[in-house]
Image: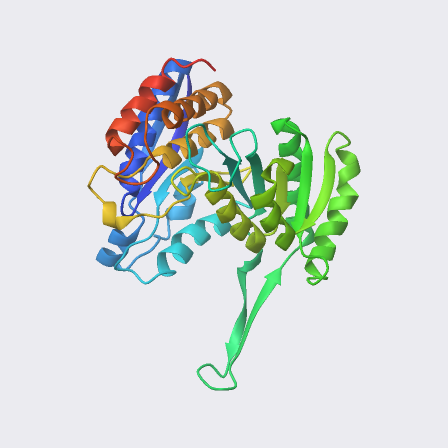
Length: 356
């Protein structure tokens, strides 16, 4: 029997609650499709930091590299200044584990309220491939004369040919594998950011002939934000840099129904990848059995697909779609019509037998 080693970082707030329901569903489909998942927990997060002053131990990265995947709940603690945990855990893992792709499906499921008038599940089914290790998030820059009227702050966007090309190649190959409309859109700002996006656009055009079955086009990021709202059905796969990807994927989460259903993957195709729900730790709902676990469950499904268990991943998604379409009243915490554990139980039950 095939076995996979999964590092579990439940994180802060309601993170442990949603991860518990995700594991419940993962174990169900593992049993159904004949593979095994071995979990090892790590307590990285706000409580550990407040207790020990340590964000990540020195051994963490070497330990995590030994796993097949990382399953993350949420990072963010009300008693820790914003940015400390996010930079010290999330960005540190993304950069040091070379998770250079952030993969964000944007799909409207049946029964989920969409804020766009007249749009339904047939209109919203796209994926954003975001470069995840360079750009403005690389941390290059500095300040001069801080705290004075003459203060200068510089934040530099770092874009390398290697980083850009490997992101674009991943996007082309993902578009082929997704096999929907086979259309890849480069999102940039070539009319203003003429250095960085000259590199992106040139590389995009240079490698496109190697993927003759993929249609290509280009859109400025400001146009993308308009068209995601007006005509989301135009898009299949969108590829972009780190900052623009951060912005348009949150917009994408809203048009698919909100953070309560959005999931993502931080991908290193040749190493260990990390999968997580996109919503925050929601500490005010901690321990109340009211938080929606479907984004965490969907992130688990993405992890299975990445590990090569496509049938199991399809069963997870089909079960989630059944839950949203027929069984819960809302994605909002406390308004689902059932509790966190009950949603997990129902999703697991459906995933055990649903047709894929």
